[in-house]
Length: 242
Image (cartoon, rainbow, N blue to C red; front, side):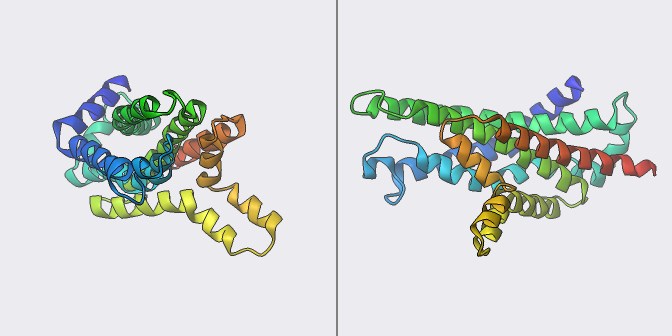
């Protein structure tokens, strides 16, 4: 499994995918954080990263499907999936290796954004006047969110042999899981029922972690959802032998 994980991870960097994804992500977040007047932290004068953590999940909805769309779709189209299956690997190991390779690439894309935190830490008046626990919790939330999106992307890639179709499906799954429940809850008239519906969505748990409080219930929900999506993907991969 580790050999396949390493191979998948470095395959991203052997093509333009990794550089396009990371470059696009850093350019967009940089423009939102420092350039665009409506969202620039330099305009409203507060040392916080709310802009970054508010917009990044929506960037993930499009960037992560761009990473995962070729995971299985390209393998099936080119006929190399059969070759991969003949190796001494279980279906679960194949799915998780591709999942962790995509998730690690997202983590690598997030690393340079620590420069934003360091810059705001220095720019604060006095220096260090920034909600560090909230920033740490938000980064954990982004990594957890990325795990669900990567799992959804892997599942979408298994559903089609066309990378574009896999991309669209993955983006739809990610949007539905992130803000679909919240949007549906807004239509409800009963506050108690509305809250219950919101709790099924990723946005509710992500916002909770962004406050700097890492609740075990939020972690269990996100990890369970990731496991369910990966298990579904593994079942689809195993269905070839049915």
